[in-house]
Length: 293
Image (cartoon, rainbow, N blue to C red; front, side):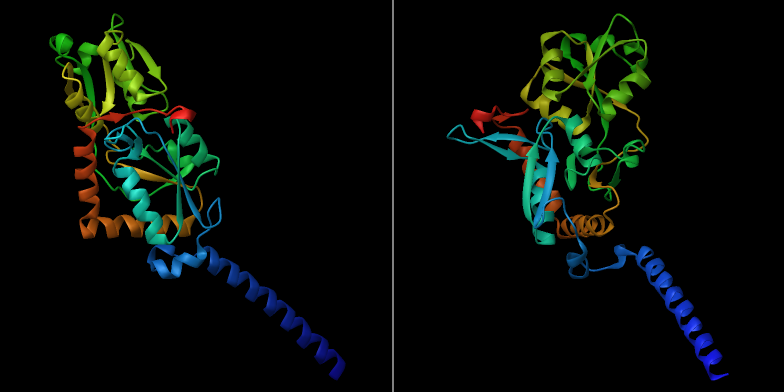
């Protein structure tokens, strides 16, 4: 009888043990990282390169990211996304590595988990959320239709631009390309890899108009007097977010804490003001040649 009782007791203990293990795993999956402090999050954060925060960006979108030319002619990566990236890395306690590339490449690298963050003036497009997570909105941007002074009278509304005789530009992989197809489907839509190429073809007359985010388009208009930021473009998912590698909940929570801290302290507003002023000076937008870096 004692033997039977011992076997029964052992069976109960095994069942209880496995039930306990299942409860622990379920509890771990249900952790709310957003309620943790940065000190609690730090030991939980994993990055693609140990000890580093790898950020990809597309430096052709002043004042978000661009190269500022120093007095000695040396280009230095600048912009309020760049300053915010430094702030986030310091906040988390990681070494920052910023990798410049084409805009479309930033989406690919974050989606394929080759980078921790994508910071390139991202709008929170629901289609992108399938391959990356979004931070909280850190800047409320807007969209615009841009043309040149000599063509401004042709476009009193977006409907005017929806004509097969017009070439309308946008950057490949961008929200603006999507807006171009939605608002001007009958036009000849030209998608170019760099925003600087879109601007260059606008100025040269190869494009009749283009869809560009409003803040960068205003920065370009300060440097190119022939450009005219003409029309506001409606867009439901306004604002800008940071792309975080999918499923990295501790890192996402830490990024949001950093953004909130930068907003609360006023530093983010200062980053934007500084970058906007710097963008009105001598700058370079696009990827540098290997020998020029």
